[in-house]
Length: 126
Picture (cartoon, rainbow, N blue to C red):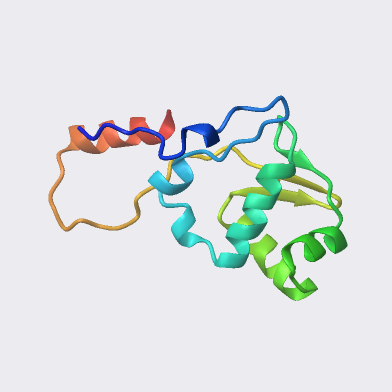
C-alpha cells in the first residue's frame, strides 16, 4: 500500500465554509470519459458556483466570459451535459445532478448465471 504524504505541507487544502465538491464517481464510473473539454469546463464551473442543492443561476453571458466560450460552444456543452445526465437546465437555473450508477452496456461475451444477472440488477437499482 502506498503511503501518501503532502508534498507541500503548508498548502494542504482546508474545507472552507463555502464548499463545493466533485464526486469521485465522475472519474470512477467514467462519466468524465463521455465529456468534451468544453463540457468538463462547464461542469466544473457549475459545481463550483452551485449551492448545496446543486443550483446556480449564472447568465449565459457571464459563463461565456468566465470560460472564454462563444454561445454555440456553451449551448453544445450544456446539451452534452444534459444528454449525459450530469445537469438539468431550465433557463435561468442550472442544477448539477446527483450521479447515478453507470450501467455497463458493453457485452463481455461471457456467459452469466441468472443469479449474477439479478445481483447486478440489484446493484444498479440501489
